[in-house]
Image 1 (cartoon, rainbow, N blue to C red):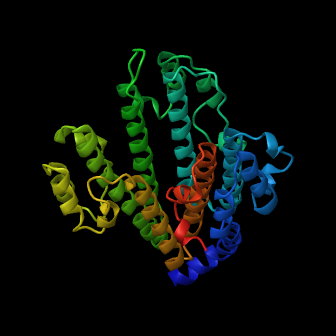
Image 2: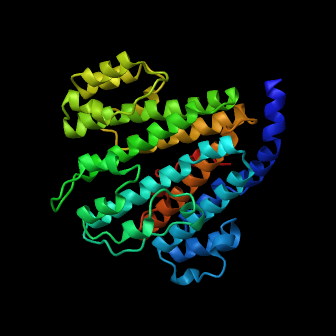
Length: 353
């Protein structure tokens, strides 16, 4: 009965997302992009050969720089998200609000970085659809010239108490600590939104996606804090996101308490996340493997559970990652990287057919 109910509920959405999935870039498209010699050539290809023609229409690609291209691509994500969001019921719209929270978190990080780098006057671009659902005043925050002013403009928002303990009135800030606090807030909220889902099938599959992502992220943080920062073991727990999935609390403690990186890697190899650390102690592609892990997880869940909320959630992940891939390629071209080198940084590339 529940399966039939889900089929009826998600049939139209599955049809919509199937169309959107067909618009995602294929391996041949990535090959084309990686063989371009300038950002303007990348923009021209996207404008004339892909679904990005909609957001690039009317633009002069010969004059386009990477920042403008990224801004227009993010507009394309917002367009797709609005299509999906508009078709959902109130319950699923509430869950999908994680997109707005994540966007707000990235905006706050961006503004803080610019204040820290002495560049507070650069414009912050946010799609109008997002602004209608934001809980923060982007224009007001973007005018902040100092940390003090930033905190004043953030006063009363749900983010104020998340980051205030990590900011001081000094000239330079521990941005790493602030960003970690914001990331923890985001993941805490998406866990909460997952728990509030009333459809059992939706809740189970989304819990798999969110739980596995947090498990992997926590392990990656333990590894990096241990290897690169020599962080005190007790302090390490402050950077970990509360989670109850495959890794039990006792196992997390065991990872934190390992004495060496080698001990950590040996322990990780015994878990479902061992592949993340297959590069050994000198691995420089851990972050990339983490992104591929999450990407492939969404591919698997979308195929195995088509008549659930994961259909659209996974598509949104693919689209977001595609935009990051394109901007990564554009950046690689800017610095003269050869295509073979750029391929290393394209997430999901081998799985895109």
